Length: 251
Image (cartoon, rainbow, N blue to C red; front, side):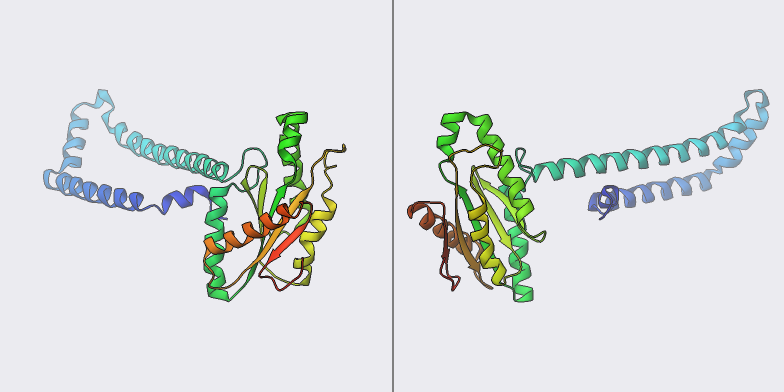
């Protein structure tokens, strides 16, 4: 992982500022040479020995070194702070999953990789059934706890290579980068294991899941539309089930 301060060093503005400072200091050097400034300073210090002016030069060098160290440490701190804010801006504050904005950026990246490597992906969209009813009956605090527990459930149940996004309210979008027979079985296992008892107490909430293959060359918007349609089909069929579109599988 690249250190935050090294990322800062790669910014174009830093190169521009460095170039300007080099030009300014080169101009000052030529000016000092032309007017023999160091010789003048030496003669002046000899004429005023009591003032200890000759000690200013090593002091200036010491201050310059100290300023470089101080500036570097501030750049490191600024880079780390910026990196932290960037990371937080990508996360859903409740579940700590990727939020929709960051997830869309990741999906675009996967789309580019798919074209380069000729890969298909499996998209899964999961929605909690009767979630609004849970909020009404038990309050939004319990609803939030269920969302958090759902996020942990997905993280523990899915492969590490999976991309998990809190897509919208109680909807979660999942991308599996490698398709196999197990990939198509996984949504059914998720639906079966998700029984609303994530908090050690039974709540009237199940889940509906839509799955769709994101084929090479397929536009991201079309892929998202297909998996959304698959989810809608699962909800309209009564919920607590898996429905698939263009997977070649019978859900």
